[in-house]
Every structure is written in C-alpha cells, then in structure tokens.
Image 1 (cartoon, helix red, strand yellow):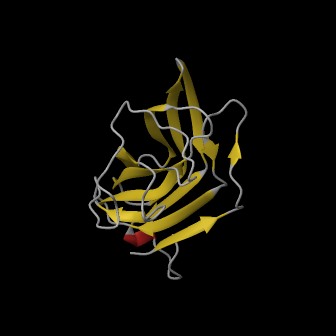
Image 2: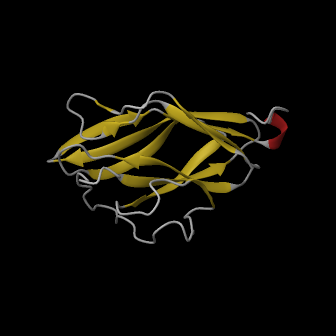
Amino acid sequence: MLGMVLVAGCTPSVQPGALLEVPPPHGWEAQQNVGSVFTDAFETLDVVSQPITLTDVRFEGGEPGIELIGYEIVPPGRHYATLQRLPGFPPVSTDLPTTRVRPGDELVPDPTRQGYELLLGVKVAAEGRWVRSGIVVHYRNAGRDYVQTLPAELVVCTPRYWQPDGRC
C-alpha cells in the first residue's frame, strides 16, 4: 500500500486566542481495503503558551467511508517526530514509544518544539474514495473550551478507486 505526503507551505501559524499552533495545509493518501484499520500517525499537537487538556478529536469530512475509531497521544521525546501510517489501532511498533498521555492529563508547551504526536485510529467503512479535510481538536484551558481545525487532509481509496498512475 502506498502513502504519499502533500505539503503546502512550511510555516505553522497561531490563530488569535488559540493555544495550539496550526500547521500549514498538508495531506496524504492511501489505498486500503474496506474493513481495514490503520493509524494515521502523521499529526502533531504543538501547544503554544499555556497547558491544555484535550477533550475530543473528530474528523472533518470523510463520512461515511472513513471513521475515527479512537486516538492516543504520544508525548515529546520520541526518536521520530511522526510515522505517517501504522497498521491497526492502537498501533504497536518498535519505532513508537509505549508511553501515552493519559486522558485528562495536561499537554504543556514543549521547549524542544517536537510537540505531541496524535495517533488517529482510522477504519475504512465503505467502498469508495473518501476525503478527510481536517482534524477538529477540542480542548480546555482555565475553564474555557476551545475548538481548532487542523488543515490535515487524508484521502483513502479502496482498490476499485485507485488510479493507474498510483493515485487516489
């Protein structure tokens, strides 16, 4: 199975009043069979200035063909910044530390700027070409709720929709 990374721009930005850095628009694509489960391990959460607590993560788009079945967060200090795609969910890989941020724990600004790796469990639920246009992150800081959308596209094609040139 092929994965491809498409990145536009190189400079992350911070939305006014937001506590997470927003990466430049980017994306990748993959061919997967219906019923398969994999981990999208390409995203990081970069806390800007104050601790936050994640309360929810959702996909923007992609329904009904791809479903978010869960997520985990790997703290900074990893050998690899991100790993793009891993089989199954939760992922098991010798390239991935076993340490995870527990639900309800705070994410704090990382002086190394590596950030927290967001592991997204993806299930391919239907035949077709499915596009997730972003990742919607809900978090809390000092009693206030925040929602930010990361421009992180994921295109998943089942085999009948894979193009002869190797693209979705």
